[in-house]
Image 1 (tube, rainbow, N blue to C red):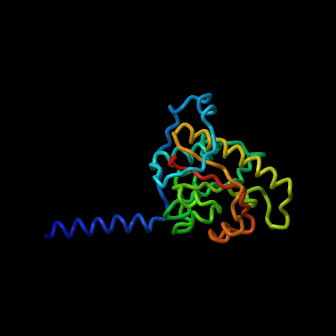
Image 2: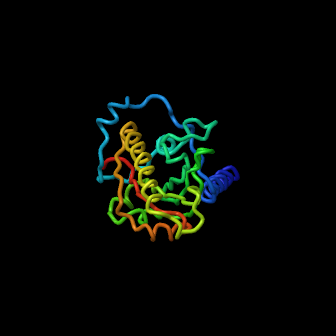
Image 3: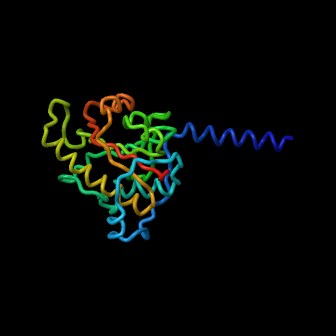
Length: 214
């Protein structure tokens, strides 16, 4: 009886610890193997027919790294280019249990807000069904801007281009992992920023829904 109570306590403690964790550790990304580049390009496509099946922790790790991780960590250089290497883009990963910011240096997801916030990632029905939504956000402070009114159309255009590189990385990684995805401009950017309590210097660019085919 005592052993059973101990097991129940430990189980509860473990679950509580997971729910209260401020970061989600990711396994090391798999940087070899997968589909050859030309095959991944041939299979790259957009799909909106998602199931609710969860991704594995390894798949999530691989996707985050492919999208915007360090491929030359000693120099803090990324898998995608950015204008003048400002690296102003931030990758927000919205899961069923919360919204996270991808921390490339530690290769982990840092909790921003608990709860299911997937509905803020887009108006289409499938957005709340799919297990993962990436949201690409430009942090203009990293681009050298200190006030929202100083953000220029050229800077926004540059961040759109940088987002395109990251999104294509995500597409190819999904093809390699046997997952489906679709990048989307249809997102209420103000509502998303408000839900995650982002600053006025954070500009939401695009969203990317990811998961398994139904």
